[in-house]
Amino acid sequence: MAQTYEFYLERAEAAADAAKEAELENVRNRELRSEKTWRGLAEQARKTALERDKADAERAARREAEAAEAAEAAEAISGD
Image (tube, rainbow, N blue to C red):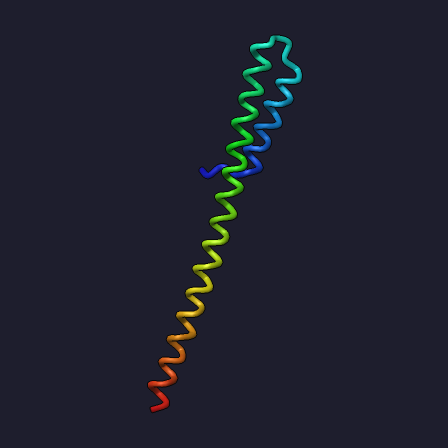
């Protein structure tokens, strides 16, 4: 299952809340490290989604251009 930006962000916020509530310094530090990691994963997921959307748009444009070329070629052949 692919994790989403929202999932990672929720985990980061939960870790931040746990850090605020922690009474022990080592627990607080662990939760802060966890928050940093979750936020990094969230950013990576966001960038990946943006890149995927961009690649999908480029593929769609390329398919559209190829379809137009094929239609023109078919028209040229049938017009002869």
